[in-house]
Length: 430
Length: 98
Ligand SMILES: Cc1cc2nc3c(=O)[nH]c(=O)nc-3n(C[C@H](O)[C@H](O)[C@H](O)COP(=O)(O)OP(=O)(O)OC[C@H]3O[C@@H](n4cnc5c(N)ncnc54)[C@H](O)[C@@H]3O)c2cc1C
Image (cartoon, rainbow over all chains, first blue to last red; front, side):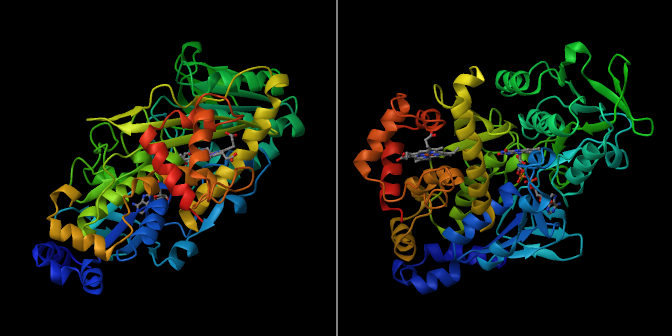
């Protein structure tokens, strides 16, 4: 489907109602081509939604990985509650829905010609483009932390082929008795604000059984974090003094790593010897949107809050972690929720069917803090003229309180979290 | 092309050809629910099935969630985020969902 045909449809709209009212004709003429870059939370959700609700539009999804490893529930691998296969998902469901899935990497976008170039040399033409490429890691931000260092100190913050999370799990298993696990946690904004703290919890959950004298040192570049009270309650209740969280003001900012000598070096020059190191580096949007001018100088992509249209180019919508959308978090649920608005907005012009004029965006992030111990944060968001706002007096955190009082809630939320995972994955890939 | 920018004829044609409007507010709002309750509200694991929910009862349950009169781990926090019109659209949508 080409640019030309899209224009032809534009002309058709001006034609007589009699011609247009012939459904077969309209359907045949109106079918445009939606290309989606990135088959993760935003991209897969968009592809599935488009195939179900706009069957007359052709969908091509470009994703280098042949199957998708979710970041959500990756921490449960560290906790010994899931295996890699449980969080790896096939693209066959999307193919069965009629999406064309190409396993390649997009290397260039030409917004004028409406073309995407792939690493393998193919060129795809689109009427509308949705880009959900996720994050890139700022390799230059922590001295000594590069691709090679990530083999020693995994980040496990991008699903990829699953090797990062598997390496981290193997390192925890191999750690000497009473060893030290250290994490380096970045400043905002970054992917999944509660993610590092769920990770700390799941590592503690594993070590409590396998290596109970081990220690976890969580070096943070911030002064506070998502669901802090709930997490710290859980840590005190479940893990005693195993976990030490070090805020920026306590010299928590890690500025350099030395993988050969297994060292984390802080802002004030303190050297910490670690047995297992998890470096979650500062982030920006994935390279495809930085290299093509869709991102601004912040490294993230400005978008129209009603449609997720990129500010820098026509006919391109950017969703997911790559966007600037505070106070919405960079979460899988937000990527899924905004994907649907973006599809409706993008395809309105192609199909003549209305966009959603009053969109509502939604987020829930469940975290597992221990065995049968779930906590959550929820928010409903609406677009404003130049951004987003959480609906006042709604959403919020699970109630705090001593475990004796909250045990039932925590158990139920852990189960609901599992239901959430299965449900959202179906909404992406089934 | 937004609704308002279309000529009446084009709008008619679009509606005839595509009787199911993708931007039906009930359906779009219900997308958020699908992340826990399943694509058509069929429920999953511990999250309840809400297909074919009685319309009037839905509104009552929603109000009870909002005011913490019904036991909830999360729906109380969610219910407060939606307007009356949106709740009505959701009630219609799930009453029809099968
Ligand atoms: C440990 C952890 C736990 C988390 N837990 C939760 C949770 O419980 N709930 C929640 O809602 N969120 C959670 N998240 C956040 C969630 O993973 C992200 O917010 C979500 O993945 C964002 O979706 P996305 O589509 O922007 O990016 P992704 O899901 O990362 O998808 C991007 C895809 O684009 C592909 N891609 C990149 N560049 C190109 C290119 N040039 N060409 C083609 N394809 C490309 C990538 O291969 C990737 O598959 C968690 C994250 C982490 C790290």
